[in-house]
Figure 1 (cartoon, rainbow, N blue to C red):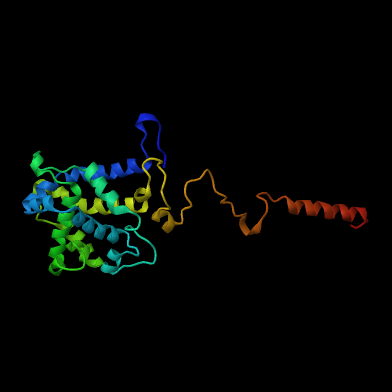
Figure 2 (cartoon, helix red, strand yellow; figure 1 turned 180 degrees about the vertical axis):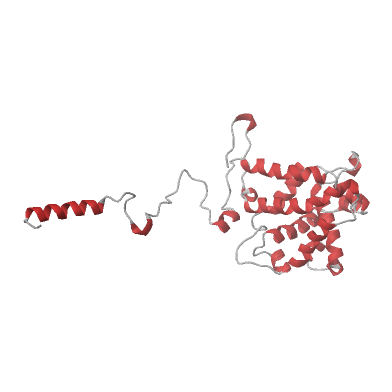
Length: 253
């Protein structure tokens, strides 16, 4: 997890998360404009923290399903823990809002957290895909969709021709966002202690990948091919020399 040294210490996870968010930042800077043209800006500003967390929980379960209620609702439960159990949602919200400030026209009154803007957009597409998702088990429409319907949300997002030429590149968020979520879900980010820079518990990504954790070294050598005990063929020549001495000693030809 390399912490670095001195005042400029930077963990590998923070660096990579920041690098991923940097790509998002360039695109999500257009988020308020996109929301404004879709009539969603005021809605995004008014969203509760629970509503945003519910929406992004549906996103995390879509990227890394597990044994949680969101994965069961979308029809892809697994026996193992997934992105929800990994603690990905609060880290995703914090990273989006920390690395990707979003404001409209530079006006403080129109500033929105990037996490809330993303949630509004996902829910807007969700209702296009399935209008019945306006009501259901969870707070947000996106969280109520099936796995296939969530995939359709991202297909429509990527193919949206309704975006004006000024914000056409915004559609690339549909490709970067899932990768950013996957990175966080498989990393130790959700259980990392800020003070010690060590995981508070075994990360889900380590469990799923059967990673043994950082170490100075591992006993990985299992032996030589076909049970050989040496890398060099030294034994057979020795046996032939002993057999030759035996024959000479006993007068054999």
